[in-house]
Image (cartoon, rainbow, N blue to C red):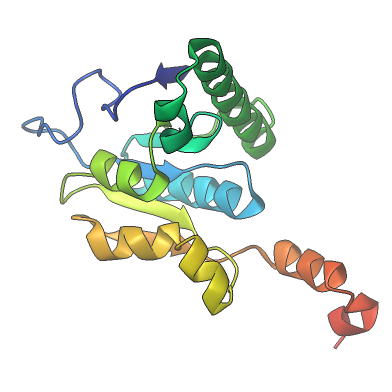
Length: 189
């Protein structure tokens, strides 16, 4: 099931994030975007959940077309609904790609949440017993980091729970080498 939360981050049971539920075991919050790195993080979150019997909350964060500032300047409810629907479809597709429509092997809840990714994930993983799992992005230059800061770095700095960053899968690194024009020689070292 993919829950659509359009205005604010909330826990899977509908309560607002940040509300401590007494006696609840920690949960595993994982950021999902559909990238290979996020799918690797989702798989790792499920492995961690099997060991701890925790629930996995897979979260895809989204912004309206034109980002929040553009939407505030020119609100368009049909565009907002289309953005939300697109996010839900991306989350479903990511889950299908990750688990091929089969049981993930752990309790799994899913949520498409409107909001800035790092901030939203940190708000959802708000309890010290939680675990926040993220795919580690590729190394980027100084300009790219300045224009679009790393979600993983933000979460590591601001989270109140442990953060696990999962390295990119070897296949992902190999594909990047091929895309940069390294050819097969670079792969066969």
